[in-house]
Amino acid sequence: MTHLPLLPVLLPLLTGILLLLLRSAMPLAVRRWINLGAVAAQVALALAILMAVAGGDILVYALGNWPAPYGIVLVADRLTAWMLLITALLAFFALLHGIQGTDRYGHHFHPLFQLQLFGLNGAFLTGDIFNLFVFFEILLLSSYGLLLHGGGRERTRAGLHFVVLNLAGSTLFLFAAGSLYGMLGTLNMADLALKVAATPPEDLGLVRAAGLLLFGVFALKAALIPLHLWLPAAYSATSAPVAALFAIMTKVGAYGLLRVGTLIFGPEAGPLGGLYVPWLLPLALLTLTIGALGAFSATALRRQVAYLVVVSVGLLLTAFGLWSRGGIAAGLYYLAHSTLAAGAFFLLADRIAQGRGPLADRLSPGPAIPHPGLVGALFFAVAILSAGLPPLSGFVGKLLVVRAAIADPAWPWVMGLVLASGLLAVIALARSGSLLFFRTEGPATAAAPARAAGLALAPAVGLVVLCLILLIWAGPILQLGQATAEQLLQPQDYVRAVLGTSGEGGRPR
Amino acid sequence: MEALLSLIIGALVGCGTYLVLRGRTFPVVLGLTLLSYGVNLFLFATGRLVVGLPPVISSGAAGYTDPLPQALVLTAIVISFGMTAFVIMLSLKARAELGNDHVDGRPSPGDRP
Image (cartoon, rainbow over all chains, first blue to last red; front, top):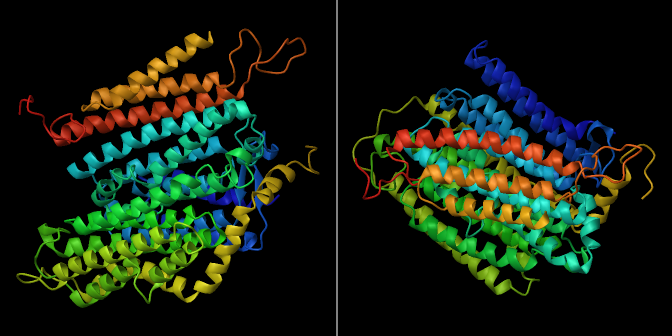
C-alpha cells in the first residue's frame, strides 16, 4: 500500500499547525516562504498522484490499515488527482498574491490558508460520505476565517450570511448521511454504491430522499440556482487572494455532484440510477442564464466577476448534467479553465481597485489606472478567457461543452443559453473595460515603478499563462478528461479497488 | 419510544427552521443550535433504538446496539459546538460593526438609533 494518497491531506495539516505555532517565533517573511514552499510541494504531490493514476489505477489508502467498508479509506482516481492539481496550482498563485500585503491585515492568514487546503484536499480524496462531511466542515470553517480576514462592514455582513447558510447546509448533509446509514448500514461510498443498487423496494423512497438531500447540499456549495444568492456578496466582499482561492470552492460542490451522481446513483444503481439526471441540467442552464444577467447588471467589477463564477458553475454543471462521456470530459476541461480564469480575474480586479483610489472597483468613470497598457492588456486577456471568446482556452471549453450537448435531446436549450450567456458576458465585460480604461477623468494616481507593478500583477499573469498551457495542451488534457469520464461512468472499478484490495490478501465477500 | 423520539426530533427541527428564518441574529443562532440538536438525535436514532444492550462484543450479550452512530454523533456534536461558538462571535462582531442585530445589518423602523 503506497502512502501517496495520504500526503496531500497530511502536508497542509502539519504545515498549518506549524505556521500557527511559529506565529510569534518567526518573522512574517519566513512564514510566507514556509507556506509558499508547502503549496509548491502540494503541486508536486498532485502531479505525482496524477502520474500514478493516469494509467487507470485507483490508489486506495486504508487509514490504520482497517479494511473497507469498516475502516475509512482515502481514494485517489483520475478525477481526484485532477481536482488536487487544480487546487494546488490555484492556491500557489493566490498565495503569491496574498504574500504581497494581504496577509498583514489579520493574524492567521497563513495557517487558515493551509487548513483550507487541508479541507479541500481531504474532500477530494475521501471515500467515505461522513468523512466528506467532516472535510467539508474543515474547509468551511477555515473559509469563514479567510472570508472575514481583514474585517470591515461588508465582509462581516456577507460572512454572516455565508456562515449561517452553510451551517444550515451542514445540518442537511448530516440528515442525508444519517438517513443513508440508517437505511443501508454503511457510509463507505463504494459500499453505498453496492447497497443502493440492492435497495429493497419499500425503502426506495427514503433512500431517494436522502440522495436528493445530498443533491441539495452539493447544489448549495456549488451555488446552483436557487441556492446561489450567497455567492456574489461573499466573493465580492472578501480579499482578493481569498476570492481567488474560493474559485475552487464552488467546484467542490460540482465534484460532489459528479462523484455521488456517478458512483452511488450511477447507471448501475437499479431503480435509483440516474437520480440526479432530471434535476441537474435544467437547474444548471437556469444558473447560467441568471448568472449572465447578474454579470450584466453588476455595478462593481468584483461583483461582476463573482457573477461570472456563477456563470461558470452553470456551464460546468451543464456539461456534467449531460452525464455522457463527452459531457463530463468537456466539463473537466472547463473546470480547470474556469477555476484558473476566475482566480486570475479576482486578483486583477483587486489591482485595478487599488489603482483607482476611493472609487475602488465601482463601474463608473474615475481616475486613470497606473500602467494602463499593462493592466489593460491583462484585463483584455482575462475578459476573453472568462467570456469564452476565441482564441483562448475559454472558447475551447465552451466549444467542447456545446459539441458534447449535440447528442443530448436538450441540445437546443444548451446551445441557445450557452451562446446567449456568452454574448451577455461579452457585452458586460466590454462595458466594464471601456469604463475602466477609456472613460477616465482626472490624472492617474501616483504610479508605482514599473517593476513593482509587474510584480504585483505576476500572480494574475501566472494564472493566465496556465490557461495558455491548457490551450496548448488541450489535446492531451482532453484525452485525460475522457479517460476520467470513462472511469467515472464505470464505477465497478472504483468499487472493486476499494472493497477488493483492502486488507492483505483480500477479504471474502 | 420511537414515536416520542420522532416527535422530539420533529419539534426541534421545526422550531429550528422557524427561528433560522427570523430576521435577528439571536433567534437565528438559537435556531441553528436547535437544528443541530435535532440532527444529533436523528443520527443517534439511525442505529435503531434498543434498551440496555452493549455496543461492544461480549460473550454473554443477548444483542447489540450499533456503536457507529454514537461515534458519528460525537463528531457532529464537536463540530456543531465549534460552529456555534464561531457564529455567536460573528454575530457579536456584526452587531458591533453594523450597529444593529438584523441579519442584513439594516435597522428596522422600530429601532432606536
